[in-house]
Image 1 (cartoon, helix red, strand yellow):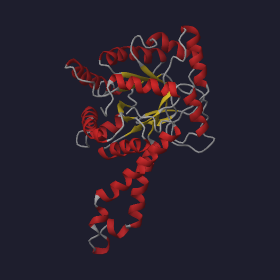
Image 2 (image 1 turned 180 degrees about the vertical axis):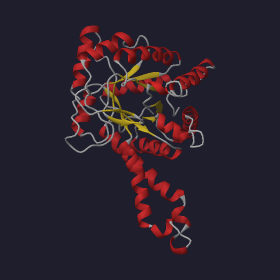
Image 3 (image 1 turned 90 degrees about the vertical axis):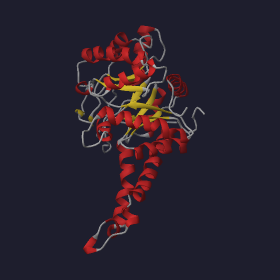
Image 4 (image 1 turned 120 degrees about the vertical axis):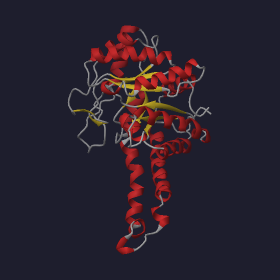
Length: 340
């Protein structure tokens, strides 16, 4: 099955953690970027994660009414059909959802999957993210408890972000400062509130200086070795070795050494959006610059239909983004690890 079942998704994450590799989680905003992600995974012979943010879902819902749930459901249903042509397995995930968008995004999507499961089907999405990083930790974890119970009932994994990631992602922003580092106490409070699997499985987006977007060297100080401290602190208190499945947010532009350290310390998923956006758009710009008189009707001419045909530059965009996905698989050690 090209879209992972709940059991297969759990197996994917377990294999990644045991093998010290991670899956690239690629944000998509269209059927074309979906195909680019699938193609990149297939060319790398890697399974992967495809995700839709609130802004991506709103865009997918169309600019007439910008309905996030419609956009997310439509692309997920589309993915269930087209992914069958790729010889890899992918999980579908929803990215960053802050408190003010829960009722218009994650909670309705959880209901969609709950209804599917009640009919004996698999959930539409395999995981959802609750981004409570703008809330107090107490409020964040209280909402996470509610969402984890619903997700668990629908055979879905929840991702939680317990402390801020710097930069901006779909309207959720945090300053780049010393608060971008999760403490052992934060991790212990998370384990106390959400358990360590017995209340439902969750992925943990802890902060170790992560920043969304790409910044010049020296602007961001990543400390992926902090994840080892979080694992050890919670393991000491609860007696469960390496208790967390970590997510690496703000991964675009990270060094090979930083990624390697994160993988060694329990990261099983790394988000990529900024780099893949650029990889998709760059070939389009190149095409326009090289074919200016063809894509535009200049000085009364008629242009060249074959150059402004969206399929012409769309194929270039897909190839550019797919190549960046294969590079991510290589960096995260997932190349050649597919289940099939």
